[in-house]
Amino acid sequence: MKTRITELFRIKYPILLSGMSWISLPKLVAAVSNAGGLGMFAVGPMSPEETRETIQEIRKLTKKPFGANATLIYPDAAQSVAVLLEEKIPIINFSLGKGDWIVKAAHEYGGKVLATVVMHKHAKRAEDYGCDGLIVTGHEAAAHGGDVTSLVLIPSIVDSVKIPVIAAGGFCDGRGLISALALGAEGIAMGTRFINTQESPLHGNYKQLSMKKEVYDTLYSTRFDGLPCRLMKTEESERIIKKGPSIRKALLNSTKIAKMLNIPYFKLLLGVLFSGRENAKKLIYMSSAFDTIQNAIEKGDTEKGVLLVGQVVGRINSIPKVSEVIKTIMKEARDAQKRLLNISA
Image 1 (cartoon, rainbow, N blue to C red):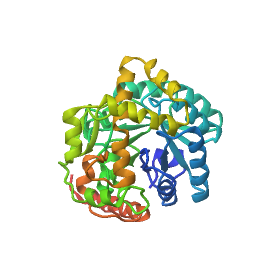
Image 2 (tube, helix red, strand yellow; image 1 turned 180 degrees about the vertical axis):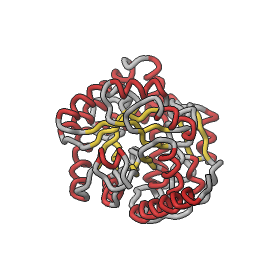
Image 3 (cartoon, one colour; image 1 turned 90 degrees about the vertical axis):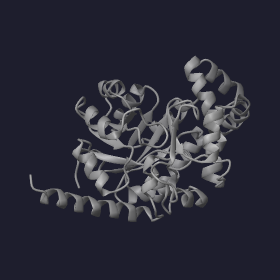
Image 4 (cartoon, rainbow, N blue to C red; image 1 turned 180 degrees about the horizontal axis):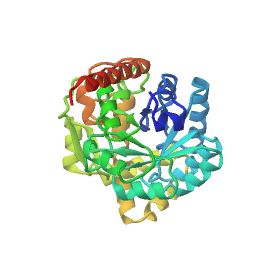
């Protein structure tokens, strides 16, 4: 299947792995790329040294194209992005910040840049400063989807830009892929579907719990990490959203974050304070949410952990290999195409 995205990234199928902190790690990234899609690792809270080590590990596992996602709101994100540019990562995806400087530097070595957006204003701005494509994230998505659903948001943004669009939020199968293409997108990005695969580092407790959830079993709130965020509905996530962020917990977690990023604590603190009132508030929320996400992903703690998932979690009932996921999606897509061709006008 050829689209503008497969041609641009030189991949076989128009399927991307979403960059998810603590999830989109080398084994999963390489598995997606080796199966014909585009693996995307998440720089997230990695230090520059960890970012470089991750790149080297991925390159040992695959010779296929892969990308990296950088969340620019994180403290010291620029240092990790500098590593991506030094290593000449083929595709860089950024979110929650202005990436014009990334576009300029990546284009100098022939790299491609994607901006993740949830609204027209940001889509147009990204196109204006030279992004090669957009990941448009609808309301259904895990973590930070927008206020508008994919069915409405994707064609609306497709009609307003000339660069290719990748649809995210609510996609897990071949019917979804064909739907995205019908809406004008050139491919799909999936997170929740890929977290429930054999190559995913997600703890088995949450893989099993995910398969018990229905499409109604998510929560969407700004009271978890400071941004509109979708997470799995559990007693703990309901408690956190009802109570709101803990300043004490945020301060305790900030020392862990400074250590993880390998930067002095006071440098981190000053960076947060001087980032502006609204941005500082968001970062405090994120710090408060830090260990609950790790509790879920790494420890499998179903009582104190919180997992970010999309509404599509209710449609996932297996834990296959990544290669099987992509193979099945492409078969379903071909079946859907045939069905549409047989429908009388």
